[in-house]
Length: 112
Image 1 (cartoon, rainbow, N blue to C red):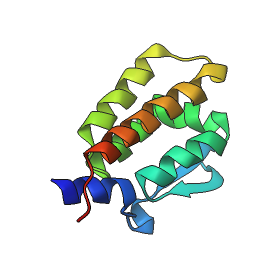
Image 2: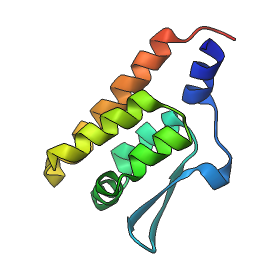
Image 3: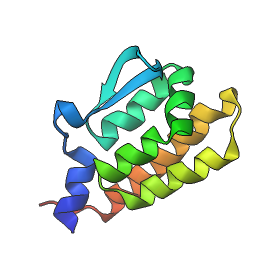
């Protein structure tokens, strides 16, 4: 269990399973994330249109569930979708949700 938690936080997934940020279909931002730590950092900087696009399509939920195998975070992403957040609040709420989850995982972590 602890090894799995460590991998979710620090382990990089292969490039083909990375999360690629788009602002719309076919409009790649040039940003991607291969780990949860990298993902939370990208949330701070990526174009907010990309965050809107992916959150409301369910892309974040799907990636955290299928690639990171993090059911708890996927559920939190689904909850955020329901709020239909305004653009100025979306980034901060998304960042807060993911960073809080990351801290929770780090607190459960032990050296391998």
